[in-house]
Amino acid sequence: MDGQRPVRLGLNIDHVATLRNARGATRPDPIRAAKMAIESGADGITAHLREDRRHIRDEDIARLMAEVRAPLNLEMAATDEMTAIAIRSAPHACCIVPERREEITTEGGLDAAGSHSALYPMVRRLLESGIRVSLFVDPEPRQIDGAARLQAPVVELHTGQYCEAWLAGDAAAAERELRRLADAAQLAEQAGIEVHAGHGLDFDTAVHLAALPQIRELNIGHFIIGEAVFTGLGQAILRMREAIARGVAARVLQQQAAQQQQ
Image (cartoon, rainbow, N blue to C red; front, top):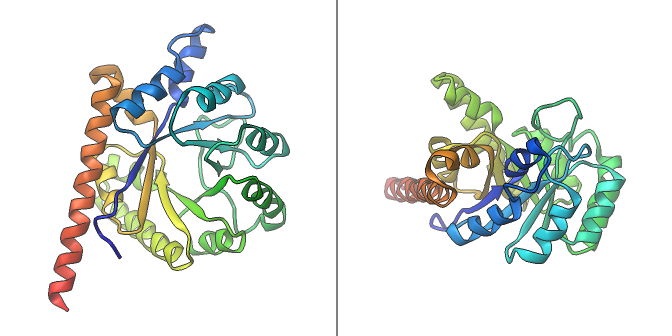
């Protein structure tokens, strides 16, 4: 395994759209944020087109595809409507996520293990349309197995419980959750699935996730947009890139130490 392989950063622009929609106007423009993010070092853009259109709108997806020269990762619920929109829009990737209208943000992972019959036709349609499919799942062995049976090329591990434990200062719970993530990432790679991670990550937790040897991409939104209020979007992205680089460097040192012990 190449410990120095890069970890990509995807910026979720949903909450730039949240600010815009609070006034029902046109500013701040999430597409402008997407362009600035790519100029500042992000590798791609993530946007969640929710059923209720509470932040990202259909026209935002159209503009992202037309105006932003970077991969778009379209987060979407497992519905026929969203599948049709995805196939019509042809983003680089779609991440299928669970969605409940009353939730504030995504509360957990997709049940890839228990929803095979519903998800399999959707995954096939997206893949056959040339769209890379990712499943947003909790770091559980049965969900990794479910993703493998669905033939999804990518999973995005839900890091919410780990980040909550870290933020609360609960070291034992944080260590336990990080181990769950590490084990799930290893299982996914063994199954031939590319591993991404996201939800609730900040500068500290991004270091820890980037240090896991299987992680190829981190998708981060709310924290970076929040930091941008104080430091500017470019600086917030630069600091996150530095955090990811520290994680990759730690990964290399860990692997070198393991080789020396052999």
